Length: 189
Image 1 (spheres, rainbow, N blue to C red):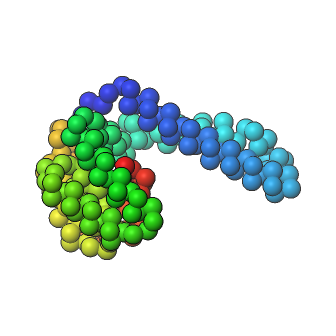
Image 2: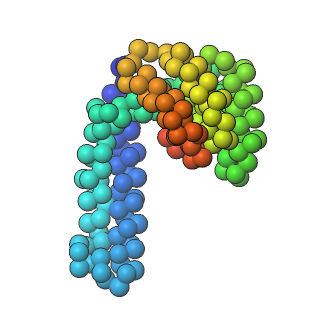
Image 3: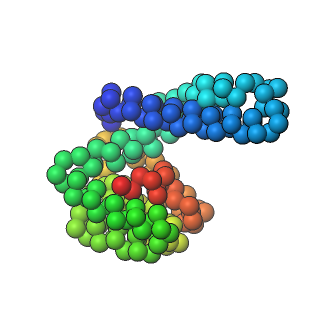
């Protein structure tokens, strides 16, 4: 699957900033431990260390065995573009609002409603499958992942493998109470 070069930079910069913020927070905590962290390294250097360490982790997403998750995130971001995508994005804001207030049942019902209006959308089916998992509905999640697999809009062995792994994971371990969809509560616009 061909991913826009700009998305590589976007993905790298967002994730590197998150690593720096995590390092900054840990550096502040190290100061709060009465200087124990200062003996190991300066709290100011924590963000730099986290960014450097995270670059190896990002490599696995961009070119390694987690490439399917990266490609899914690209398709998800791309799906929210244009007139069609903006309509979906507006409705997914309601779903996100419900998730924010821990009303998973209402969020799932709204996602089901959106899916009825857009039955051929890969990203929506993938989100729906993740929502089914959070609701504890294993069979529905497996069915939704299988439909999503058929709706993959581009030829990509990584993305296909990612969806197949989700299906086998649910079949083997049952539904995950915390979503397997990367950051479900955050990526549902």
